[in-house]
Image (cartoon, rainbow, N blue to C red):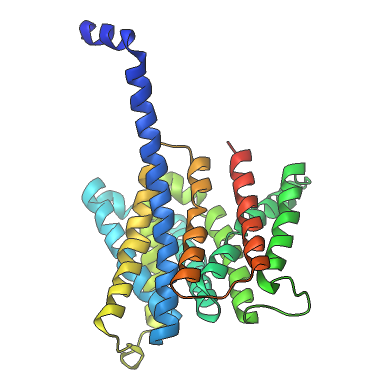
Amino acid sequence: MSELTTQTSLHPDVVSDANRFKRLKGLFLALLGAVLWGVSGTAAQVLFQRHGVAPGWLVAVRMTIAGFLLVVIVGLRKGWASVFAPWRNLPSASGMLVFGLVGLLGVQYTYFAAIGYGNAATATILQYLSPLVIVAYGALRSRRLPSGTQFFCLALALVGSALLVTDGRVTSLSIAPLAVVWGLASAFAVSFYSIYPQRLLAQFGAAATTGWGMLVGGVMMSIATVRPQTMPTLPIGAWGLVAFVVLFGTLLAFYLYMVSLRYIEPAEASLLACGEPLSAAILALTVLHVQMGPVSICGGLCVLLTVSILARSRK
C-alpha cells in the first residue's frame, strides 16, 4: 500500500491522465446521447412523412416500451422494493402521475407533433427555447429581474426564433403555423418537465422517476390512441426505425446521459446536449433534403448560442 502511494506521489501525471480520461469519457457519452436523441427525431420525421405513422401512436409505443424496460433495469439493479417505492404513498404517487402525464407525455407529444407538421431540425431548435422559459419563470417566482447575461440570452433567443420560423421574411412563416405552435408548446413542456420533478428525483433517482413517468404517459397515450385499426402497416425498414427510436433514441440515449454525469458536471452535459439539434439539423438538410435558408440557419444557431451561454454561466 505504501509502495503504491509512493509511486503515485512520484507520478502525479498518472492521476492527471486518469482524470482527463474520465472527463473525456463523460464528454463523449453525453455527446453520443445527444446525437442519438437528434437522430431519433429525424427517424420520427421519416416515419411521419413517408410512412404515414401518427405522432400519437409513435409516442405511445416509444414511451411504453422504453419506460417498461427502464423500470425493469432499475428493478434488477436496485431491487424491486426500491423501484416500487414511488407508489407507496399518495403524495409521491400523485406526483409521479402528474410528471408522467403532463411532463413526459407533454414533452414527447408536443415534440413529435412539431416534427409531424414541420421537420426535426426546427422542432428540436424550438424545443431548446426551454432554458429561456425557465429563466423567465425563475424571475417571476423570485420577483427579481434576470441578470444582464440572461436578458441578453432572452433577446438573442427571441431574435433567433423569429429568424428561424420566418427565414427573414417578417410577413410570413417559412414552416407550417402548427409546427411553430407545437414547437413552442414543446419548449414550455420541457420547462415543466425540468422544474416539476425535483422532489421525485431526490427521493427515487433519475432512472426510476423517468422510467415510471414514461410508462405512465405511454400507457395513458396507448389507451387514448392505440386501436387495432390504428396499427400502421409498415415495411421492415420502417419497423427498424421504430425500434431505433425506442431503443437507441430513448433508452440508450437517456442511459448514456445519466452515465456521463458520473464523470462531468451537469452544466457540461447540458452544453453538449446541443449536439441533439445540430445532428437533427445536419440529417434534415443532408438526408431528408429539408429546405432551410441561410437566415433560418443563423436563427437556429442564435438559439443554440443562448443555450451554450446559459450552460456556461451555471458552471
